[in-house]
Length: 386
Image 1 (cartoon, helix red, strand yellow):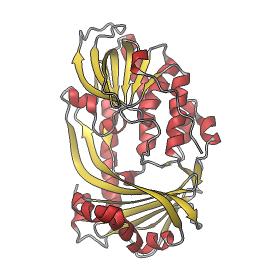
Image 2: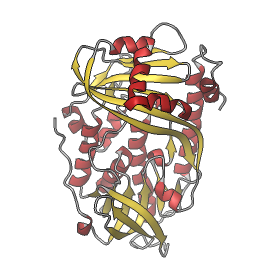
Image 3: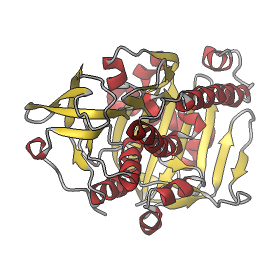
Image 4: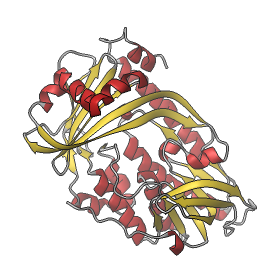
């Protein structure tokens, strides 16, 4: 099914100045733009380097996500879309047999398996309907700091320089406030000289494919391996995603022979491999995504803030990516409120981010620590020693 994308805006249609510029068109940036326009009559520009509709990893979200979608005004659209419920997890992790973790007892209902392209398109359409200007295939190049006065009407706090990734044309936009939602690279914060502290790095080698024949459980499947872990689940529209998460030295064997190494590694998994045998797949595409666990040393300033993976990025084993992105986007509207009223800038958001990352680190150590079978392997030792 073709997704309804927002209309493409050209950079020569863009205003010279905006109250708020959001860098990043994922769920965090889109949620921020929506939340701000719902509460304030401000001009908002959202800029994304990629084209709209690209494949993104992050297909599962917890039941509580629906509460955030209601606040963003997209819950009804979400229910109309083809997202599917997920009954829970089936995993071989810390044990030789299969364990199950079901959502049936959760009062919020089941978790969700997302059609990410449709999910992102729904958020983009909502943002555009609220008057957000959206620019795709546009790269942030650098920033010049302006007057930094306390007048919220000033659009000269920052001068942002951009280029179109297709025709290489360049342009400049003035911004009163900037929200960095550019993913783990945190490009705006980096341009300001803010460092990101990385405490772990992994890589996901991912296969998306269409299911031509065969039936499969609706559960999410996880399997721990000596030097990696494996994930597999069905997606809406008869698609499937499978991935192996490991460290850099193991990447090359997975990429070998046009990713036949990945195909073989998936087939060799005892639990997930037996499930994949029941499926006939076609039109496979392969991707490698870096996974950096880390936190910015500073996540907010007088005229800017970082949200989502730009502020702090997680191992996907935490399964909090989409939920975290949406919740941070909603929080950004609170920060904008302080900026508008020229309230004394509290560090409440910074404190929250610090606490969230410490919780994540403890949870990560706990989850990896559950797997005792491979504790002699460096992959597992490094995940539990931190």
